[in-house]
Length: 80
Image (cartoon, rainbow, N blue to C red):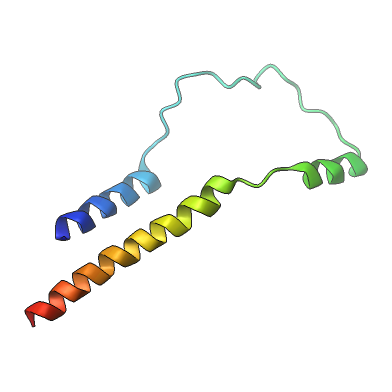
């Protein structure tokens, strides 16, 4: 049980502090930025997509952390 907590803590540290390992060059380096009118900027903002990965992944991680915490607390209270 404590091993699970350590493993999840280690995963969290790696997510927060590991440097990305991108090996491919950015494909947009040769593209120049376009000057947009205020209407074009507004329309572009309206069309931007939401990154659903964070919205799905974060609650999953919170649920997992709460589960681990409750297991540890149950174990500690059983030993007392």
